[in-house]
Image 1 (cartoon, rainbow, N blue to C red):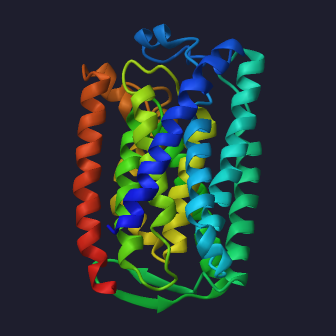
Image 2: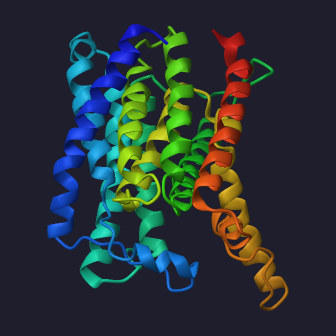
Length: 329
């Protein structure tokens, strides 16, 4: 990683930490407390009322950093880092609406699944259209580890891309279920994208946004580690999902999401398996509870252990992914 990446991470870390000092008390004053799932682990009831929408702090910290440190690049006509941030921000806004409705109604239900899907799909299509118009999205699908690419029909590629984006965003959202989990896992994913962006000379400046995100998430973890003083809410988790997906496509390697997003994938698969098994067996459950982190909790793992294991798995897979793309640079 180059010096500019460390500067971006440090600036975002400081800004997010400062914003958090002011934001958390304000969220408490607004009674923006999280409603806990009634069917969740019983000990989660103690978290009832913990301020949510805390993702606002790293959204703002990252945004200010990207604008300040990326200003020179924008004057030179390079806007990729801004497009990625704005795309993630759109998902963050969808999450904010969802969180606001939950807080206003004092329950754990916000937007309907259909409403979320339509909004997310629209955001994905808009982003892909913009990236193609700007010449930042190709129709070549890069295969990590084999270091080869092949052309895909544009229509097929855009359908594939929209599916991957919406899927990735919701996978990150599912992962945000215990203190520090989505935050720590996504921090490592952002470190990977920072290294990849710094090594990738084509399109330059790709490391700025993920570096700023890594710094912002490190600061957020100070407040979100167990026992959490604030939750990121859908505001934060949908923003993170948008950021992860956008970076994969902005760097033209969407399939790299498979190794680096292994925890997101396992969480999503556990949910799919649980629902399918429940329907197929007329009421039986494959896991004690889905998604996977809740199954592990009910199996005796504490939140700290789950976060450490998930982070270690992500770190190993990100390292393998790095070796899988090195031949590209």
